[in-house]
Structures are given as C-alpha cells and as structure tokens.
Length: 163
Image (tube, rainbow, N blue to C red; front, side):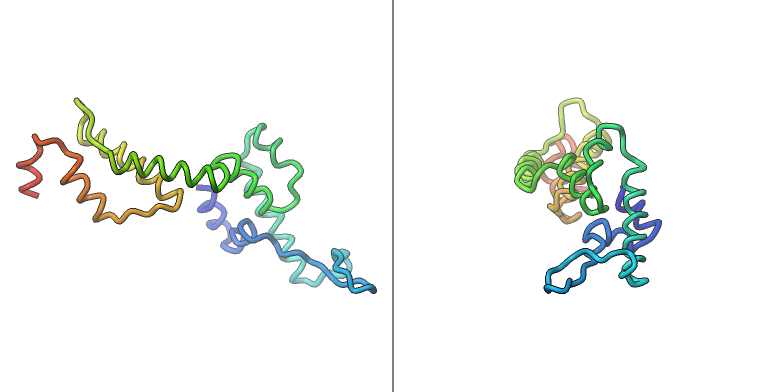
C-alpha cells in the first residue's frame, strides 16, 4: 500500500526508498572518499537529496509513535524503509520460514464444516495474498484447479462437473 502511495506521488521516489539517494562523495586531497559539502554539490546531487527528503516525508507521515521511535535515527529514506520492513516482516530468515508455513497451509487448505463458499474464498484469497507478499507467486490457474478439485467438499461434485 505504501509503495503504491509513494509511486503515485512520484515514481522516482520509490527508487530512492529502495536504493537510496546514492552517496554524494568526493575525493579529498589524500584521495579518501569524503561526503561533499553543500557548496560542492551539483544540481543533480541536490535533486537526489530533495527526492530523499520527500520520500522520508511520505514514509514518516503514516507512522504511529512506536514506529516513529524506531526510525528516528535514520537519515535516509532507504534506512527508514529497511527498518520498517524488518519490524513488520522480519528478517529474510523469518520471511522464508513464514513462507514455508503459509505454503504448507495452502497445500492443506480445505473448506471448513459449515463455511460458505464466500467465506472459504475470502480465507483462500488472504492466504494467497500473504504468499504473494512474501514472493511466492501461485498461478491463478493453479488456484482455480485447487479449489475445484481439492478444496470443495464432495457435495459440490455435480456443480464442479458442470463448470
């Protein structure tokens, strides 16, 4: 949701969030990389930092007090985004484990006793959306086949055959 909101404002802002504004550095007299002073920055350098400031504003304006405390020391939009991702989605290892657990739930998905088709489909959609958010894409044809052949109870057999 945040991604779409930022892209809707300015497509380049999303690149700043995911990649950073790129370090603006120069070599000093000894050949060591040093941050540029504002007076040394080109118009392009300043534009990148302006975009970074806008991206930070969009990320921060939607945060609650607890999240705001987590990101207060972050100086660029990418740091804020990375911090929020770990806080909400976990580390890559946690995400992999969650993906494995959700995929197992997907494989074993069944319609519950007394559940309507609409309730079942909402549960199924939530599950597939969570898998998608973790990078596990399941083709729509596979979802349809799964529902028609393995999820619906035997009482639906005549309807499935008609479909």
